[in-house]
Image (cartoon, helix red, strand yellow):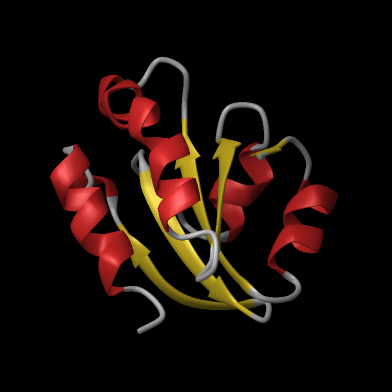
Length: 105
């Protein structure tokens, strides 16, 4: 699911377990990771929801969570930020896959 507003973001993280990728259309690392997202959504469907938010379309979110680089993955549980994978560590599919596999164990 694509988050397109601050209100949607707040609703999405309010309950349950959620990981949100903050990305941009012009980001080469984001484009490299994007084709694998549907597979991860299926793999982790019973553990957490995997969502996306374009930082250029919803800049208030990047500012609120100090997202300086993309892609970044933010981990929430019941509305509380529990962790993050920063852009410097999210350059490859393997790096993101390893991060996702460690969440909510």
